[in-house]
Length: 408
Length: 72
Image 1 (spheres, chains in turn cyan, blue):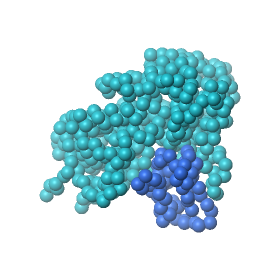
Image 2 (tube, chains in turn yellow, cyan):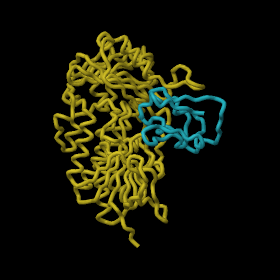
Image 3 (tube, rainbow over the protein chains, first blue to last red):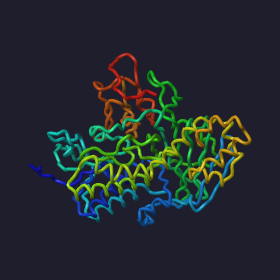
Image 4 (cartoon, one colour):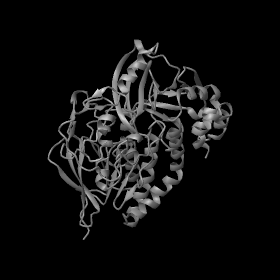
């Protein structure tokens, strides 16, 4: 009865989620195959590349020097009227990664534990057994003749595209309201103080912000994210298209330093800024990382969250192989339930903050920035909204209506 | 009717991530649009950061939106 399987687990996607999953699962002696559609792991980069220090240390990993461009010592937040707040704190420490090297390093760690990695290999179709349970994938290497591979457990770590996840039946389609559309340049020269810089304003970046992430050798990632539901562009065909690039170009033209700088790299993407999907596991399959919308809704960042989810899901997979039970129940108990208890509430708070922030007008934003201090900002980032909200509402009571959501 | 200007495409797959009917996917090294699945909702046009997807009125392809799909 038992079907012959080619592998114990097939993971679709070799990003941070997939490679961390593979590292733990292969470390426990499981036969893990990771396939990635890209010719080279980590390329193209579609990311601002920022990551918090504590989040990496939590994984018990020692980040090699080649994987990051520069450390960050703090952040600077700029209001629509140009007033800025700078704060430096041990908690704001982090790195601007070199995603290309970083992703490869994570994959190498998985390979060293015994996982198999295949690049330029695309999953075309999810295979199912007679009971409609997933049991394999049709894959193709570089567009060559497709072939079938079977495994009792399939893991989707596909990121935004989530083609296989959709075939598994997960509801991964993004609503326009829950995505930001982004454009980013790597620029040089830009003299910085190793601070993350964020610029707010509804004219500058509707329902979003412009960021400048410092990199080594006087370089910086300069990017913009605007709300996917904010159609503000010129007419394209019969519909207005998103316009992150013209808005970013406008910002750069108005920046004393950047207007003279060159661009070294263009990249862009669509990021998820919504809530996680309603279920992370079904019989014989799991979904991890950005594919499951496990992202921070403030900035769409998901590196650390994806790594954590990968590790948790791998723990569930190990349990499943011990018990020879690949039902949804076992994955839910060991992966989805603890994830929703630990990480879920933190992200829910961030989503609330995002939804409140997008309702604040430029004038109110200026007022908020002139009222709060760097200490308050720290509180907000930690998810303690009550103090700062009381301060702002104390001086401008009409904001209570908008900000009430944060203290409910 | 959707057209993609492949020259400017940065392969971010943002269009796939919002497409309610899987009508736009990476095939080989570029995005392909499958007109038979397309319902002309225009979400891909609005989300594309490189602004390379265009939509033209005229050749219509109407089908019902699937349950749960949001046009926002």
